[in-house]
Image (cartoon, rainbow, N blue to C red; front, top):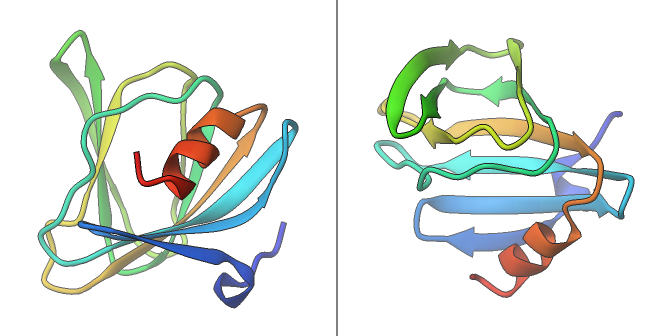
Length: 119
């Protein structure tokens, strides 16, 4: 799917912003914008998370029971799929901003609602 960030709802978070695009119980897409030196808390999603780096660099850390199992560095144009229910973290350790396109095939309605409500 081709999604323009200007068509998304911007939700400001302490680490940058989440841009929410189309979302329903079948498909959701958007962008994660991280400021330099910022990172999201460790989290998991109930469906596969597909990421594509669109600007800057992003590091994805994968965990198994609090043990680091992989470190993936995404450069512009690179993609990764994170398995459902796999704990991970998005990190921007660079001095420039990072923009990552994300999409989910499956129901993440509660997660989207929590983002909208800044939970």
